[in-house]
Image (cartoon, rainbow, N blue to C red; front, side, top):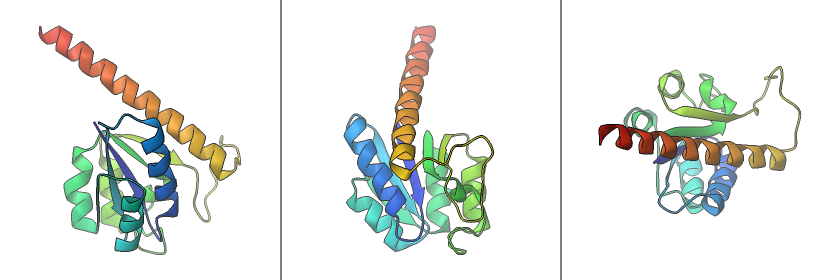
Length: 149
């Protein structure tokens, strides 16, 4: 199972997510970091990602191969991160069939139905949702194996 964490700028949100995922998920779960720039990717690697890269081609090659995508909601918005997230990167992410777990963070963005929680609480909820998605994927794979036997 692969969890993709996406972030831009300095990658600090991505770093926090990866660090928390490493504490809460089994080691066999592969965590991949994609940054909108090399600094973000490098900082997420330092937090414990198994693999990391940046650039449009890295998004094109990596996104179709992951099960879960995690990051701020701005990763779905073309030209976010002061233009670092290109429309093509946003398209790869938004069209992916992977489950998306997005933090409601972004400039000039308000989401109806979300509460204005501090970042540590958002991180807690993110980790809870990723763990649930990992468990769901495992259950689905076990059921598929049993059906094929």
